Length: 475
Image (spheres, rainbow, N blue to C red):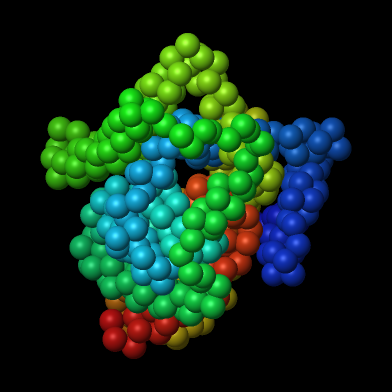
């Protein structure tokens, strides 16, 4: 039995306060910082160390999230370089033949994101889709917030929650539940599709009245979002400039297509592995080289200064749009033993507090021995473990609870494990918390990450409830 301390209850109170603040559509930055300070004081017993905890939590969160900020930065810098050549306009023009309206754009975005994310995870998929297809969808009349919703639900939710191709998530769940990986993976795939399709349909009907007729004005307004005032590029181009522009308009999509093919090859061969961050690093490195090449082609005499300017613009955009997420993530990172050890500077070998997971373990005894209560209890446990912003870190706990509860409630442990996996990954993977990888989606869509989470909340929750009912009744 886990012994809960006062620090655990303060952490729980902070979690509830932050969730309530989000539901009331208020900024959660101040509550996150204040509750981090309180947890630090209560756990360490020192006012000074409480102050240090407030800073350290944000510092650790910044280090963990910096890869997301960096990929946003380099892709934004690449877009600035392409815009100077007017290659961005030529690059997206062919997609207009398919994405002719905001309605079709919503479903095309979701389908392409799901396909890429299923093989490569959403981390590398978001930059690919965000850089090339979001501008097309916006020009077609789809509101920027709707592009973020489609990508988040299809990638961070539907694809990642099953993780059917790479199978890291079902392996973690199945191993802890002591069942076959394929049993969890197959059930998780079906549940992810039920949840995702339900969420996409509901999200579409919620935003369809906001879809406008296609116009370049939408793209111009979107490009101006979070942008620094710069001198507009001259729209008159010489024949040589047009050739250069056309070259990069073709080369950039083909380069990213080649990366996708290479990543697909890596998925089905043993010699190369490109999982998670490795795929995003490959895309980021290629984006940097393309940005340099485009800048040199535009004006080689000023290229050294312009490359620096593009990167600065990228960093400014990334931190202006996503910076407030860091202190929020800092609070929830206190719930993970691995992260709290870094925040409290606990020496290796000593036990670090794991406030979130210890609270969940303490509450598992209150789940009644009934199939519906067990199913929704595992869903809730999974969702709570996902609050740390990972989605995968709580899967061993979910799997262990599934194996323990299954005999007494008469439900297949693989079914309970798949339900818990849905809750953990849909929340932490993530679509329902602002301090997860949904930060990258919001960054490329140029919308508020908190507003994006709000737009996803009702459709995703409805999908999770429906898939849980289906699992209990038919699995």
